[in-house]
Each structure stands twice: as C-alpha cells, then as structure tokens.
Image (tube, rainbow, N blue to C red; front, top):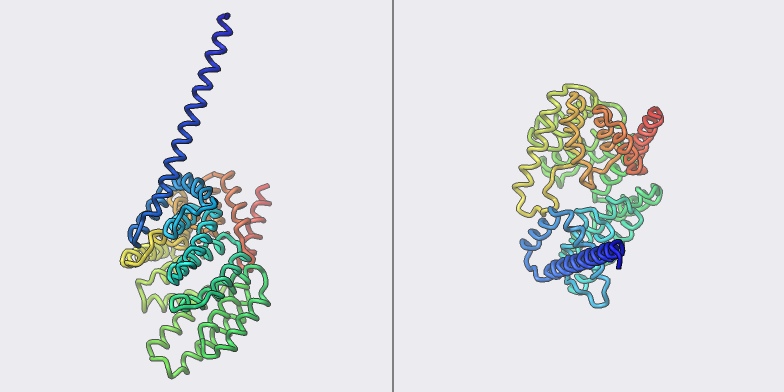
Length: 413
C-alpha cells in the first residue's frame, strides 16, 4: 500500500474515531440530562421547589438543553414526570422564553393536578399558562385557557381567582380586535352585578385601552361620584378608591396631551404617598418624556426602583421568577438618561427592560432604538425598530407608536 493510500486510511480512521467519540459524548450528555430531569420528581416542599426553579432560571443555557430532552421524554407513552417536575419545567421554560415547552408542561401539569383535585396547584398552573399565552400575544389561545379555568368546578381557592381570570379573558377579546364583543361581555356582568363597582372601573380601563378616552373619563368620573355617595364605605375607603380612579385618569390625560392635568394629580398623590414606586415612576417618566425637570425626574425614577426593591425584599411569598425590577421603571430610567444625553448609561436599562416579557412593548423598543441611533449603532437601531413594529398590539396608542416607527424607518431609507 502506497504512502498516500496509508495516509488516506489513517485520516479516515481518525475521522471515524473522532465521530464515534463525539457521538459517545453526546449520548453521555443526554443521559446526564435525562437523569437531571428525572431527579425533579424527587423534590418535595414549596421552598425546595422554588429554589430548584430559581437555579434552572439562572442557568438559562443549560436549562434550554434540559428542556429539549425533557420535552421529548414527556411525550413518551408512560409519563416519566410527576406534577412537581412538570410545574418546575413549565416555570423554567416560561422564564427562559422556551414558550412551546412552557405550554407543553403547563398543560401537562394541569392534567396531573386536576386528577389530584388540588385547587391551589390548578390556580398556579393556569396562572402561568394564561400569563405566558397573553404576553406571547396568543390572544385566542388565552381566551380559550381562561374559559377552561372558568368552567372548572369551583372550590374556595378557584373562586377567589374567577373574577381576575374573567377580566383577563375579556382583555384577550379586546386584543383580538373585537371591542363590541368585549363590551357586551362587560355590560352583561355589570347588569348581573349592579353593586360591583370594580366592573365599572374595568369598563373604563377597557375604554381607555381602545382609545375611547372621553368615554373613559365619563365612566371614571361617575365612579368617583358613586364612591362619595356610598355610605357603606368609611372615609378612608372612599379616599383610597377615589385616589385609585384619579391615578387611572392620569394615563388618559397623557394620551389626550393634557400633561398639566396628569402631573397635577400625580403631584397631589405623591404629597400623600411620597414613597410610592408607581407615583414616583409615572411622574418622573412624564416629566422626562416632555423634557421637563430632568434631574428631578431621574431622582424620582431611581427612587421608584429602590422602593420597589424594598417591597420585593419584604415579601416572604414572592416567587423567585417574580423577583426582578419592573420593566416599566427600567424603561423610564433609560429614557430619562437618554434625555440627559447619557446614552451609554441609558442603554443597559432599556436592554434589561426588554428581557422581561412584560417589557416587550413597542414603546420600549422605540426608546432603545433611539439610544442606539445616538450611539451610532444604526444597524442595531433598525433591527430594534423592526422588533417594535412586530410587538405593537391593536390598541390605538400602540398603533400610533407603530406608525411613528414606520415613518422613522422610511426616512432612514
């Protein structure tokens, strides 16, 4: 055999050996992942379950590999996972944005805990599924999941969540661009429950969502008068409810470009509640968005983040996946820093806001793109604006922002 021939066979043998070694390693890795997935069945107790979920969320890259294996395993004829394991996998998939796997494990978990007749576990599974579908813009599927929940035989735990899930279902109808059907559902509920002022408030919120701002103001104002005349409420309760409605009105006044009205209400609310994160953030953002009192605005927004962190730290029932900065507050801080021309400092806050599915909003994409343009990152800005267009929902406000972005992209061309 010639030298060349021997060399060829040597190379072929080496390639074969490398291939076999790689295959063996892959098989070993798969075996370890399968074992790791099956070990989730052994976890018992809320704290160990929460700790394991947090651990998986932290190791996003490793968890994605684990989910791929676990997802295939879960399709086997004999189900290898118990209810604890499927819920941990669902939450981990949800937080790492593996949405197909999240839906698979949430639904599997629902099937399992239904057989166990556990209302509390059903609430946890459905809450995760509905939240995941809604935030992922699967609004028809959200409505279906809500209906499934509402059709369950209610126990004490399920009954407490029925009103919340019902409203989430109506919001999913709104997001499907079916306002008439949504209002028909709301009006039916108000007629059946005439003393339930929460339903009236919800109607006003939906009117605002759909850009029916004058109608929303009238509905909210009628609610304030209703609180004032309600003798069943204490003075403190009346005041708290009125403050809640006044706060809701600030968003409408901003949309109507009546900025002074919005800021006056927020200043009054902050005088009474100086440490409230929401009031600090909203007033700070409105001032920044309109180039007013920028240093003061930055202080208020930073205070909002700090106070929100204090609240989370003091909450013993906070779940690991919920221990994160509010995306809206991060966006506000990024935006005021942009207004202060601190572009490099602004960018990380906006990037972090968009990591949260609650923050994947057309307005936040727009803010990040503006920062990227200011940093000379034109290509990245264009991609970010395109993502913002995809993220825009059907509401009037989001469609207006989408049109603004499309105009910017057209001008760039």
